[in-house]
Length: 314
Image 1 (cartoon, rainbow, N blue to C red):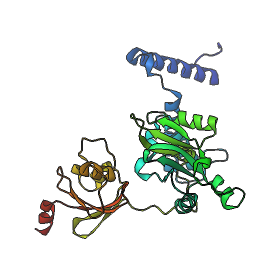
Image 2: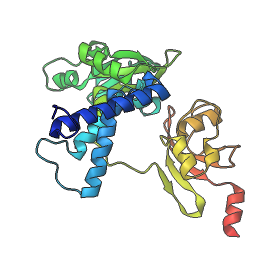
Image 3: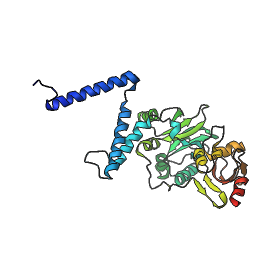
Image 4: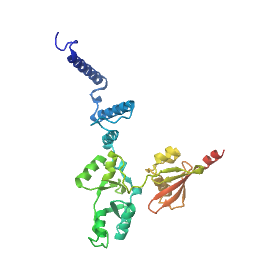
């Protein structure tokens, strides 16, 4: 009998499999064109999906020695999609930036380091749109330890961060931070104003997940329901989440804002003061400002439309 004939063990199976694969590839090429070939990214994602399905079917058994754990597989997924993000997608928004004015004293700087618990603090001139640099806590410690004299101004302590456009890819920024050994980047909008900031840790967390240390506060709910249909909200709450959780009309706005704090600023035309009540005409909801420091709003209370209150009473 000739070698490789249908009755010849493993050789015949491999030949048949090869022929079937070639036939199927030819059919796909004929129907869909050569562009339908899967990428390495897609193949990896499909393999991870298949593995997850198998693990669910077999139960939560411990992975075999040398195999990927659930945490490792999630990291691989995050890494596969990391290049799809821009710095604007992952940056700390402008409203949450903790910074110090260039004219502040060293005592003010030391107090802010103690309060914020950050290792780097941006320094601005007049407004956040003019960030002139940053101060590293290591330089402040040298002064507090008596190894350096207390400066009259912050100028001797100021280092230069990276300044990057909001459209820059997150992967590109990670590479540039590594190359320039800089751990803080200021994100600029199209008018060169400050849009946000990013640290090296922020980028790494996009891959490995949130990294919390002993200085991080426990996460608080952004939206908290209150009796009478009211809601108390963090100004950083995303409008998409507000629309989904409370009223879709609250997310109906033509301006380029993403948070409740931004919505309050747009309605008032300035940073509103504590105690002010703003009308959101599209929805009928009222935004009561609970906390504001003159630069940004931090907390609000949402009052439902009169119609909603009447419906609840009925």
